[in-house]
Image 1: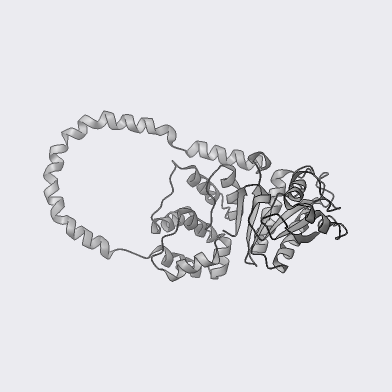
Image 2: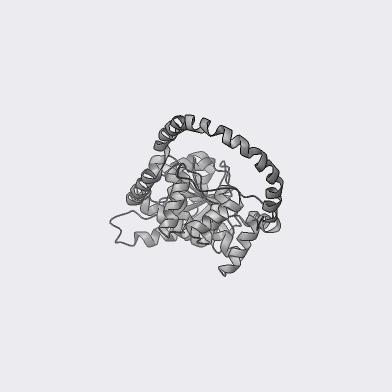
Length: 334
């Protein structure tokens, strides 16, 4: 997918460029900065010494040396005071300047850390929101695969209110606790089921006689495929293909496969991603999922989180993916 949140060590990402949360000297430091310099080797420091430093909110590019990445893009994030000293604008500039450099150097894949969210003190949930917003805006106009790399779960945080609201919604709708009741109901009803067995047997012959006719009728009623419904909905919404697959966080090549194959069967996250992109209602989303052979269920936390966002009218796929990642669920997209 064009934007993906992953847990990894950024120095081990095999991408065209990784982004370094540097200080103004560009001569190395602690945290991500120190780890990147250590992994890249002394040649990186030697090149950085020729750059004359870097101002906050700006970015400069060097080679990757011993890293699996071809380039390192160094950007200097703001030190967070109280959010009233231009910190947000400077952080946004870090992401925009870094992406512009990546595009200028024909990078197809880029990995970012959460800039300024460490010792610089930018609140993690706000830092993540800035990253998602700027990167998603960029991807609406450009073809690139971008990773936000989280080293450990403690370094990742969505809004406490959002997390608690979703947790409460899951708790209210999750049906695991009802499974024991269902099993007990089956056991209690067993004698009754046996008593009607003979009656059902009498009906079998009649049912068998009409089965072939029913099958023929059902086959004649097969309606549009997932691909056909998707393309119809795009037209109905007045969207272009590019607008749809970009809002769905779907790769252009995958969309081309779906468009060219009327019988294409997407994965469930891909199908839901298109429903989110098209801003379908819950019932329309269910209809689209049925075309791909899926359904939403209250026994699945992933499904309940999707239902939560649709019911709130929030169709920002990147915000949905933030929440899915926080709850250890699959992300939407290809």
